Image (cartoon, rainbow over all chains, first blue to last red; front, side):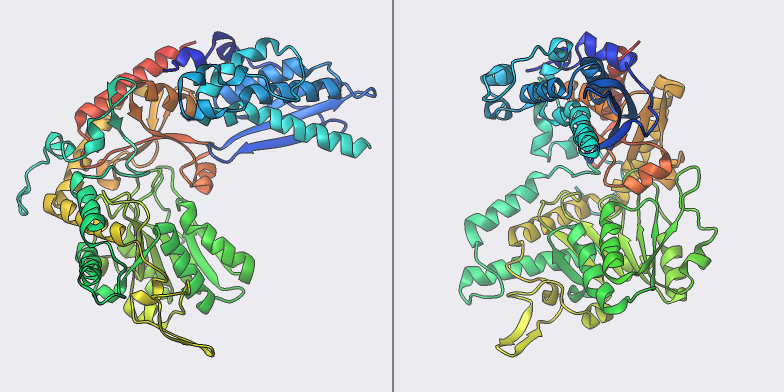
Length: 166
Length: 416
């Protein structure tokens, strides 16, 4: 049985207590994207400032939600700052692959523990660093949406920002 | 249990009637505090449904053979039990639906589309469940009807200061008898009287009130009352719409198909008698029989005793939570147990409801976290979500104590 310590790793609680890059950016020049989890009412606002080379020059996070959604957003903001859009996209893919539930996890079988570690086709080989701490969320399937909310919102923001400048 | 007793309920005895409540979760005895979402089912309900499938499974209102007749009789017997349970005037006024949501959609789609035109006003409250909001908003999109809202006061009661103004010229009033978030009992009779005086019909959502207190449709004065079986010790898959016969008679059918027709030709159809006019297709037969058994079960205990039991548990919960957590815990809604049912939405420290319910789960304490399908209310309350504990006839003070212990552990876990 997965325990609370699998879900609430110390680094997650740290980001929850002391969220990084919390706040707003002026729109425009920044882009703003909003994401909602209709299930629990959590909301994430991502303010995104891209520089001329397509790098994430600055990012700010607003909104409210549980410790998982808030810490995931905070860790994401730290992870993508200064990265190119391509690098961010790779990171997003790798993160979401880590968060994808495999059938064994849904069945709650022995394989559940290692469900997210299996090789998945097309997943970029990037280091997730601190984001690895969120791996345990997969063991609590209803919380996966909390962890991915910020990343989905970021992806939406990048798409919109790129479309606008194209 | 004797039918007439007014003795307090022995929740331990009641608990023993519910097979699920003897299981463990994460190695601990389950503490089920989410009956506002769905209730557990007593063995008598499960047995009645099993018996139907094992001995009289046949389609109803069709076959002339023995078991088909028995199945039909059992289902219609269940309808009579439900009629007596809420004191509807006749079986024709008791329509079985898929759930309470479908019952409310039936009213809006059938009565609403036949009677409401652009600019017509419907009055709702800020504490409605989405099921009594969205169907009306769908009609608003289609027809351009106006929706007016009864606001709330600081303690989560309806603010009826401007009631007459809001109802002026309105055609319908939709109101919940008891809030699924705040626990507030609404003054239904006062509201249905005011609606009638204004020429509006009243549509009452009884999902939270019918399972927990005596319901008398004649006293409520409601034109329509919707509720679900699964919050009432019954099965999922069946809800009830009680409606005044004159209104149901005049309404066009909702869903079309078998059962709801008297005659069909290539030129058209004529509708069946009430209530079957609104029961297209094979109905939830086993579920109706299960609902009948649930109503029998609760009636044997006595709904006044159920209410008295939950009222005293509400008192106990307020006292216990206040003693143990002081200002760290705030229960939303009316603070007086006379004004509310056993539904406690609460804020605890500054913890998010998801995090609270996650830790409570580790202690086998089941509470709901989220917006409870009442997002307009969440906005009014200025919160995104709440944690909600709710009690029923099988809960006792030990469940409240277990909740408090688990909350203590939650506070410790997130202490920073």
